[in-house]
Every structure is written in C-alpha cells, then in structure tokens.
Image (cartoon, rainbow, N blue to C red):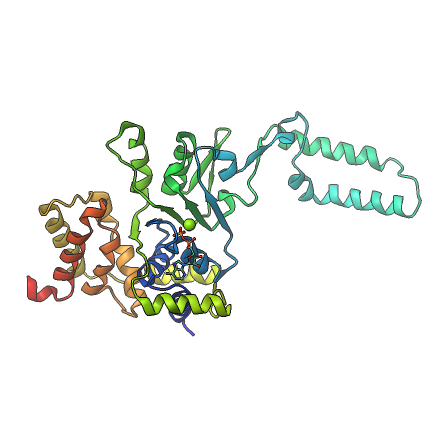
Length: 354
Ligand SMILES: Nc1ncnc2c1ncn2[C@@H]1O[C@H](COP(=O)(O)OP(=O)(O)O)[C@@H](O)[C@H]1O
Ligand SMILES: [Mg+2]
C-alpha cells in the first residue's frame, strides 16, 4: 500500500462516516499535507467538528488540542502556564533532575539503603550538593508547563475562533503564522502541522472593534463553507448508521510519521512552467473581475496544487489540479461563485480558452 493509498483510504473512511463533506475532507487532507491552516464557515450542527474529529482520530501518534474559544479563554489555557516553583531561587525543574544520571543514581542508592533498613549515611548531603550544583546551571530559568497544550500539539482545532480576546489573538497570530509562541520573553517553536478553526460567522471587519480579527482570518489560508445535508437519501443513511451504532468505526488510519513522509512526497511534485503561467492568468483574471488576491497569497499557491496532484496520482502538477484553489483564492464568501467559475473555465480545458 503506498502512502497515497493510505491517505485515500482514510479520506474514504471519513467520507463513509460523514455525509456530503467530500470537499471538506479533501481540504483537511490538503491542509495536513501542506502544513496550512483551514477555516470552516458554517451554521451549527453541520458536522464541522465531527468531520475534523473523524479525520484526526485516524492519525495515530498525532497529539491533539481542541478548545471552544470565548472571551474568557486566556493564554494559559491555550499555551500552558508557568511552573511557579521554577521561579524560586535555587529550585531545579523536576525534568532536569530526572535527566541527571548521577543525581538519579544517588537517589536509587538512598532508596535501596532505606528499604533494607540501613542508615542513610552521608547520602542526603551528597544528594543535596549535587542538586545545588545542578541549580547553579539551571535555576532562575522560568519553566512553562505545556503538557496537553498547543506547544505540544500536532493538530489544533479552535472552535468559535473569532471569540478570542485581544491577548489570546496576538499569541494565536504568531502561532498560526510562524509556529512559535513567546513566554516570559523567550520564543519557543510549536510543532503544530495545521490549525483548524471554525465559526458560524465572519466578523464585520469594517467595525473598528472587530477589525483586529481580520489578521486571524487572513492567516487561515484555506477556507471552506459547509451546508446542511441536501440529499434526503444521505440524511436517512446517516440516521440509520447512528441508530445501528455503525457511525464512528475506524477502518483506516496512518501514523504521524507517515504523514511527514507524505508531506515530503507532495513537496517533490514538479510544477511545470505552463502551470505557473496558468496560475498567473487566473490571478490576473480574478483581479480584473474585482476579486482581491494578494501577492503573498498568489506566491504561495503551489503547495495546494501539488497536494491535489499527489492525491490525484499525477506525477507533476496539471492544470486541473488548480481547481483545488477554489478554497484558497476567496476572502469574502460573496466572491466564491466568481472564483469557482473562473477556475472551471480556465483550468478544465485551458488550451481551448487561451
Ligand atoms: N453531514 C453529516 N454527516 C453525518 N453526521 C452529521 C452530519 N451533519 C451533522 N451530523 C451529526 O450532527 C452532529 C453535530 O455536528 P457537529 O460536528 O457538532 O456540528 P458543528 O461543529 O458544525 O456545529 C454530528 O456529531 C453528527 O452526529
Ligand atoms: Mg462544532
């Protein structure tokens, strides 16, 4: 089974569980393959959380962080809190002591002596001296406890993302954009592959109060809109699966390491000049028709096309693969029809059109 087969099997398995979310499921895959962030816009109850959770649970070894944001959500809840004991002069973080073999060896000896009823001798003093020596090197370094938070998460899902308060927003922007966070003046890397963020509305960026949220919106490069299930037969099938307990069974998965290998394969897919030229034609056409596309956005288009080509089994990017930009090139939902029509017209049979 190739890596591509594994990815396709997971996508099919998720699609078997979630009705009419093929587009979303493919975008989740593209986001993970390209380390991009994905925004999901849709009314409550349209399986946004459900689809993401179904996908995430099929990636073994991926650490996950999920949070419903509100104005009360603070940075500590997302990025972890400072370990207060690390601020006490002379204190040594537990993990530093655990990594020191001499210290550990002395502790084991002490334990053994006490267990066998012997006296401790001068071991406690020796241990204390060792601890002091280590503290000369390590104390005063504030330590942040990040277990289970974003700094230790491969996949992050932020629900109601626009509810974030201003303080959280600034940290989130840095995390989304640079995969870094700052604590006590120090900057640390974040391993997160993709941030998924959902909301049932887009803020009114013209309102000065909400303007600040626009930066967050911009950093969610991929965007998708969900709808209710349109097909009656599919709705009834979902209902049946729920009633029979079939929903939620996992038949396919891949590991985090395999995902990283997949990312390498994707980035190695060649992009022919003709495809770059077509992308440029699309850019000019969209701008001409009043759809704003920044240079930054345009210049970062190709990983998405490479991911789509990889998923389609193409050995290099083809013009049809640019159809995947449908969920990349719009900013305002009102621009979606223009973007889609332009792509359909220019990518499906480009030679005919030019
Ligand atoms: N397209 C769908 N396919 C399968 N189940 C669905 C679908 N849409 C909604 N559901 C059901 O409705 C529930 C609510 O979806 P949820 O993911 O919580 O919505 P959202 O996050 O969009 O508000 C899901 O857990 C699932 O049981
Ligand atoms: Mg939800």
